[in-house]
Image (cartoon, rainbow, N blue to C red):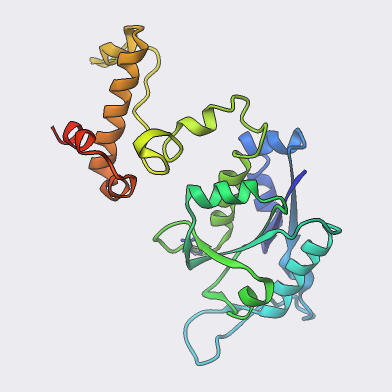
Length: 249
Ligand code: ADE
């Protein structure tokens, strides 16, 4: 079974948040095993201290290397062998976590260890000692890494085999579709009942039953939305001239 270890100062909060929805159901169905490790348990300090002021002065507190390394190594040892897991540390200055990252992690036979960063950072020796990769979930600063860890775990677990009933549905959305927007486009807009709401109608084509026309309409909407909101994704997707003309018309 795919194992995810999370090292955190808030194991209850993380556990609680991951009891809901798709991840919660995957846990119940034993498609994934999630283990929470309380960083403070690995402190050598009588007051269970896990942070200290940064060398060279500066604001805030830095997570100390010894408890973090001890917690992550304990989590890895608790696996009792098997292929080594990928180890991630959530950090505002990490490499951007993308759908491609989630896909790689979901395929990794050794599973995943996520260390939640906190405070102003984490001692820089932790990553090389653990062979860990620092990842950021986006260009904003969170007060703690727990929210980022929830994002990472959700994005990975939903891709594990059997988690989403329909194998198509993980692949159909934004960032997961085929054709020219592979690994890049935004999802087309969706509608459901009622057909008319406060004067706004569902686009006629979606009621037509013409699957070809619906697919073409959705593709165009996807391209337009991507051009409007995330033009850099279109550049990365390498659209054909024809597609570009279609979008820009
Ligand atoms: N910790 C603080 N900000 C973060 C971010 N954007 N991503 C991951 N971890 C973080």
